[in-house]
Length: 339
Image (cartoon, rainbow, N blue to C red; front, top):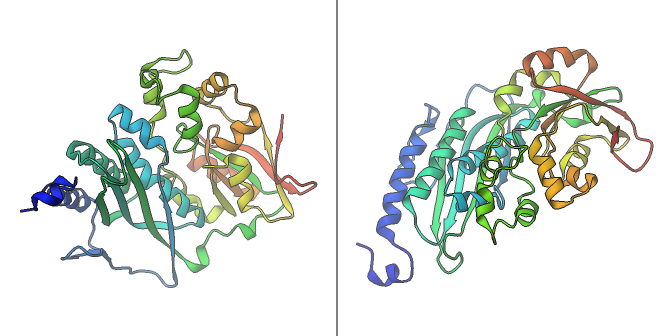
């Protein structure tokens, strides 16, 4: 039995132990035979096999202030799923297969229902990409977080054969840019969004219906981050580079995979910009340049590929579109937008 003194300080060890047992149940739904018994639970065990020259690929990230919207709406499945998806989307830019995932959740007040829905979302995200949730950490920290505040971070490890790594050094002049649509904001730009709509001062705005949207603002903001691994895994061998369009938008993320002597020439109007971005720009009076630097503007992933491979990629990813090409760098900009 936990001591009354520790419980009085804000930490209930008995309830925390019960939560950890529930988390083990969610994790078990993601396990295959490669996950070994890790009795004692200090660390997870995963047996890697079937590779000639395996290279491990890792990433870590969180969902940012999108979690505040989730808290205001008491809906955490989507951000749990996002946590897995955004990290997996990062490692697939190297052509990696996701292997296992770890999570970190810290909070002040232990709300079992909230944590249940969060872990359900994380398990959904793992099952979507056949990734095992093998370990994690939950921490009750009442002196660090206040009220319903919480923090969330994820860690993923994947693998790719050394000779199959997607390396941006292979990008060449004349390559074609193929954009793959996003499902919405994904997990970026929420600090600006929350400011524009004043969601902290007036949370009721999350239930407002804008003419351009098919549902309430809050529902739109919590649309899950699209998972690109099932779509793009079959075409890894056809691309020279992959850019996950997150913070920094197309100018920041696409530039990061281009050799210094090359630029991406993007044709504006070649893809559909989702209505939510138009609502944000209008309501916040945000300029075009800032919109493209903060948000994905309707493209969650961009593939750079030889022209001869475009048709195969479009056949595999039917909602993708050609959005531009790689050209010789003529000035200081590595990403150039053309009307």
